[in-house]
Amino acid sequence: MELNAFVIYVATLAIASIAFIDTINANPPYYVKPIEDENDYARVLELSLLFYEAQRSGKLPENNRIPWREDSALDDRGLNGEDLTGGYYDAGDFVKFGFTMASTTTLLAWGAVSWPEAYNAAGQLDELRKAIKWATDYFIKCHVSEYVFYGQVGDFSLDHTFWGRPEELNTTRPAYKIDPEHPGSDLAGETAAALAASSMVFRNHDSEYSAKCLKHAKELYKFANEYRGLYHEAIRGAAQYYESTDYGDELAWAAVWLFKATNDTIYLEDAEHHYQHFHLKERPNEFFYNKKVAGVQVLLAQMTGQPEYQNAARAFCDFSVRQQKRTPKGLLYIDKFGTLCHAANVAFVCLEAADSPGIGDPQEYREFAEQQIYYMLGGGGRSYVVGWGRNPPKQPHHAASSCPDRPAVCGWPEFDKDAPNPQILYGALVSGPDEADKFHDHREDYVYTEVTLDYNAGFTSALAGLLQLRVKSTT
Image 1 (tube, one colour):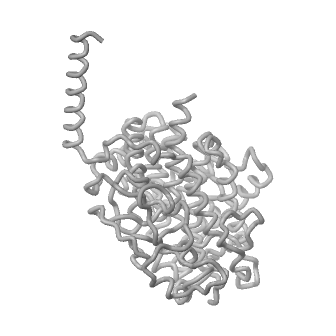
Image 2: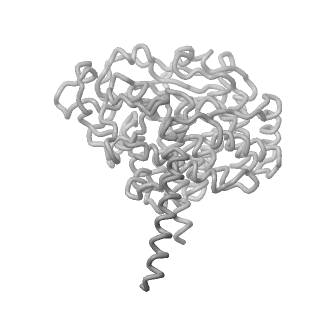
Image 3: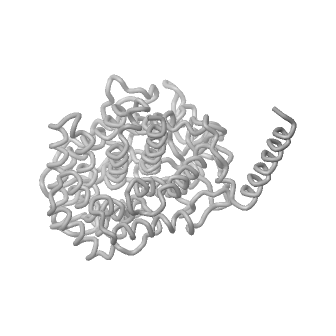
């Protein structure tokens, strides 16, 4: 290289370095380019699905990949002896909450419908189908007749007298249902959405099972729409933990998913009616199991192309990306319970918006999603995914993984022990830090270390959306 050229080259590097430092000083650290080995979306996607496998209830298959898990809760029954085995334990405890299980399933299925190439590239498409089917099989069992659906198995107050392995549960497990006299439009609607979305996942893989899911989805939506009510008024134990504030969003959510699955305009008419009747056009501040409005807006924008829905979806994502509160290190902050879940869900729904013409700035939304997920994988200074990256959580609030290998006994002393969980709960996204980016990795501090089905749902699908971008960029 000639001297003059070399001088120009060095000067250019210096200017670029100064500009980079100015950018970092002027903006929070989440603008720093992610470290590639920490941002291995395919590997984390695999681990996240492994977390769901660790949450399975019922008789496990022979190819179970969680060596410290075995068959459990094989006596789960309805009030008339119906078989209610299977499904997923909600969190680190052993109640099966239908509302959050269904919401989780819908979000997993949405990511699968949108970005199957990402799952295929990661070698996880079959595992994803298994994860979804473990839930949908259970929902079909719970839908014992057209207008009766079991929405919960296990009692939270009883469950919390026990700490140990699910295989050694010694508490009674009552079952709770909704019916015409005790309706739950939110629960039935969310489950209808989950089954409709899942029917699309199986359409080209198992057409008979896809049709079965769709049949139950239609019946449950009809139940939800004809018999109106809040599910926690029928299943009162759920109110303390998963209270539902309204059911209008679930009715619209179910209808729009049924339209997407069937292309029957009667469901689109219903969705648009619910959208107007329940005032869903106002901008929400969040998207999670109890607030589906942002998802409804994005789906309606995707499927109709109408400016009303495009503008609503844009308003949500623009607010989230540009104005919503952040921690000092750049994490979107909505609520201390499930801090990371809230951020991941918004990242996911705005990735969906980015793929939809007419909704905002796709690049801005994708960069935002990448920043949020990178924070969770280590960009904030530590990983919040168990078993992954720099200094991951060692003490998730999770009974089964806190137990040593059999035949050692497990009980409340394991809860109190200030030591890493003996079993690694790979892929679990913990609740996360507080608004100052502080995190306490202690089992008893569940506000930081709780893990749940819904915490991982939007996170899993956001990983798929980001991986899809990489797949497209290399083809």
